[in-house]
Amino acid sequence: MPKLTVILAMIASLAATAAAKSRPIPVKVVVVAMFEVGADVGDEPGELQYWVERDHLDRVYPMPAAYHAVRMNDDGEMAVLTGAGTAHAAATIMAVGLDPRFDFSHAYWLIAGIAGGSPEKVSLGSAAWARWVVDGDLGYEIDAREIPADWTTGYLPLRKTVPFEEPAAPVDGQVYALNSGLAEWAFEQTRSVALVDSDKLKEIRSHFDGAAAGRAPFVVLGDEVSSSTYWHGKLMDAWAAKWMPYFTGGKGTFATTAMEDTGTLQSLVFLARAGRVDVNRVLVLRAVSNFDQQARGLSAAESLAKQRIGAYAAYLPALEADYRVGHVVVSELLSHWAVYEESTAGGEPAGR
Image (cartoon, rainbow, N blue to C red; front, side, top):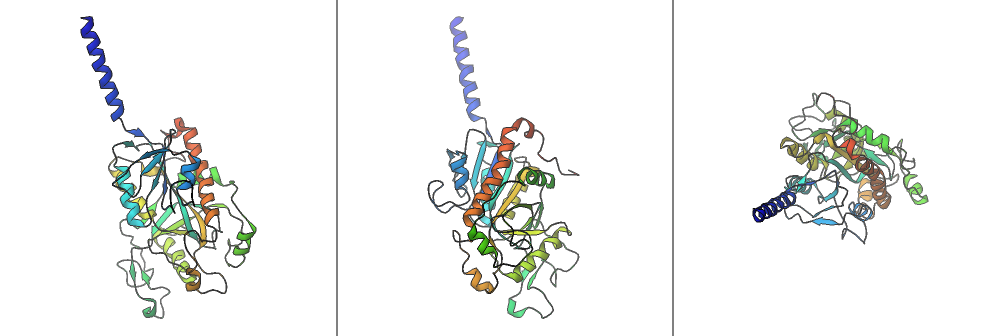
């Protein structure tokens, strides 16, 4: 009988070990970066590198169905690199979100990257928390040389016959209303974060018009037009400044333009329907590496020719702002996980 007891105990122990190994890894915070210049560490940084190096995301999990492996630390923080553009982002987030190795049921998602910014709302090196993300790709377009004389733009909403025709009728995937309570909570956590400024940035800013263009970098609540088309110029900025309130019933204020976020958000919405994630725990933070238009004395084409990754006017300051501002929120969530695991920071959206 004692021998049988020992055998049964060994079987129970092996079963418990196997069960523990098959249990998904609980993820507390997912940082979503979009591009990296080279390696994840040790060279010229892209959007991922500071997170990997400074938060010690040393555990690497291969992700063959996605753009890049994911990385984690022992605190429950994960970083995902989606690749540039909406398609890369959507496919990568779906692959990661469905991976059975991980439990995202209580995870917060922080999309953190650089962006173009409107000088009316932000300055170089500033960081903007979005409450609205509107797709800028879904629409009709007429070549600029054939735009009717009474049109302000050749870009039209789908199923409309003139620009900004009322009533607005966004198609599925065009407008994402984030949890505004969470965004405002994040803003309050970070509004006093000191951001990088320099004489070089001051000199560059002096060549731009706009209500916020001359300000030192700051943290703000500001919304994003997301499109895989990298547009540029004062007239395109004017289009985006109307596109945002048109699709949000006047609630959104255009501040930044970036590429991937509607793809990421669409996948998160689908994953939420599948019970894999909580879509009310999604944050979008974009830091301004360049203005979305030309400086005084330049044409849009001349300005666009200078817009290249690594050569943006505030490239490194924007990467630093992303990390400094985003890390405050990540640290708060991880340090007080017992509170934020069950109760969403900033509260649940009204009516949900």
